[in-house]
Image (cartoon, rainbow, N blue to C red; front, side, top):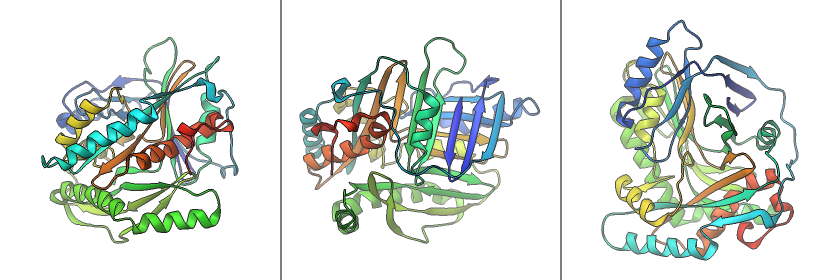
Length: 378
């Protein structure tokens, strides 16, 4: 099953008719077009799925048996919790101290004069439960935040056995295409929200005034504009940079909008492949940042910080950055969160940022009913 829920609408795909054949990321657009042309008139004219973080890893894209798009009733308000875990079930990879040391090493690389301007470092929280989560209930809880897109993707849709899923609640649009109109809304530069209204307002003001965060954000916006510009006859960010909020975080965000030169421009999947991974989740320059991530991180990101979305036979579709996510394998849940490291980053601040980004999923699972220092921020 594949589900996207956003702004009162749900796209739900079930079953599997045809998998996209594997290939190099640079050939994704061509492979998507060939797959959709080859299955025309045979089931939904849409592919759904995800791109992994690593550009060299295979995508998971497929044509479903059924596809349903529908309006949803108004979302509930308040909070929800699965209540499956206590703080004793939690294991961090790497530890708080180890992650801080990783940030120090990344800062040394940035200061080393090799051209690296930013690198995004992630860490994990692994949870073990006595039973498998209720997937539909977890998706419903994640959907309570009106400022996110909740998603669910079966990572082995054509196999039996123990379920393996990617689930999450992302605030970030990587790219969308509708006809010739293209849009992206990168988020880079973040701070945990305050517990009280006055503290929350102060943190929002501090983020807008932060030179370090504004520089981090500008790197991502410039990168996306530079890649889209050759494809567009019109391109800009009319609203400029502003604040974006979720239930747990403030982010700096910029809405980018453009008009493609030709209807034969890349499909939404091709645009996602072109942009991903952006400096918001990888770093800049891309190749140097990926090299640093491979050397500094000891865990596999899998589909975390990849892209989840869909593309239809017209080339239209939308792709979201796979953030605030969990990979679920039976009763084991692995959460991921990352922080962007640039000149001026403070290791302890980056630890707290990742902790805050874990909170949306931890709250849904009930872990923060018994908060621990390592996963508590604010």
